[in-house]
Image (cartoon, rainbow, N blue to C red; front, side, top):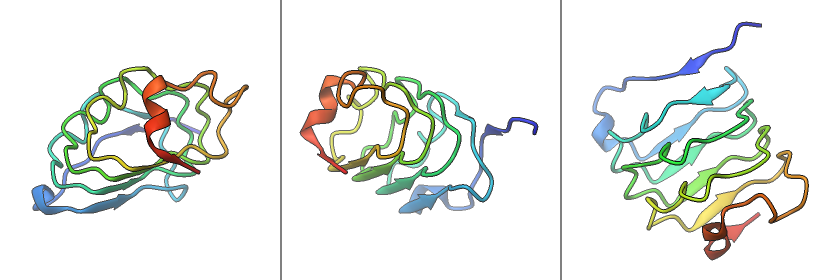
Length: 116
């Protein structure tokens, strides 16, 4: 299977409140700042893909992001700086990933969220 790189363009993307990208077309990696034009995005669902890592600046510019779902991927760790740019984030789902020791490979900032 050929790996897909994720990039997208939306009509009126500045007003898009929610994106759901799940197993229907698996994502293997997400570029740095690819979501940055979506400042009003509140919910980003990236569950059940094949993400193995997340860049520290993947979610830069998402000032309104409140809910981030990364469940069901292949993540083994999260970069320490990944969540520093998401002050509004309140809900983070990391279930069903490949973390070897719960909490050990997760950025310290993660603990301010409701984890499921």
